[in-house]
Length: 426
Image (cartoon, rainbow, N blue to C red; front, top):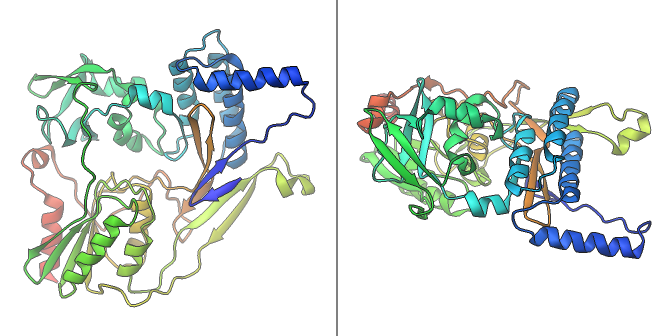
């Protein structure tokens, strides 16, 4: 096993010593045909993947309820051992059993499924005050603030509940955020009923357009006084390098507002975080679970051993900016975005405005199968520095502001407006 960042790639060794050459040749041929078989998964392949799912989860998943998972896994086995080798059905069953763990970083993925069903819906939709509301739209016929009342005539909430079991998420709120970002649960062509009865047809294959990569934005909101930087993600170094360049431009500002709403993480936020922290701070308290290995020597297997560690205090260097800081957060701030935000809230470096963050961040154990299937299993449970629960809870803002549907429709950014008001009052 080798670890790259927070993802562990696992390649299972092949044991051949006790296998006759003829049988070995058959197994190798079967595996090769499986890898090239397209939309079918033969029985032996289904069993291999299912076995790996159980082994990975039982070994690494923190806080596992073994009895509950065994019960869920039994239901899964009954489904995949049926005389059907349909690949999509197997993928959905595997997604479902992994989703029973209720962890946003524990998921099953198949490259084949992605290639055949990955066309995006083109909408970011959140459950909002009992309604399903468009937050961002890449479709001219649908606007921010529109309420989606039905999908193919089925009430949106009912449609969500029907497909919820396939969505890996750390909470029901997190699942709602991920719903429209899970293309496999939608037909290739379907209709939306919007508020007011308007009908919109979505053809994912015909309407599919690649969106340009999001870029860091920066501008003065109040000249020479209050500046604004929007960081869309932490993938690579480009977005953070641009943010650091803006910090140098805004170094005389009385206050800077950093907007990480909707930021999905996707990388290491450390460079920007360290450039803004002006006081000693700690990172997460981490808890991992282990089975087997050294535990066998003490007769503890298959009991669970928990290893808990707290990070050392980080002494920051001279920050790029040491003035007043405001962070705009929401339920779309997830994973590395929450890793970025946490010390600013816990150690009082910044005021957070907006909504609770998603509450999903974990180091993982990763398996890549020959036919393009993948399994990602959370292996570390992150908690706040004082040991309190984070997963499924998220980071609460200092000032909670919940925009209304009317605010969204009118493009009235009440969170940013409040931050500017607070910044100018200081």
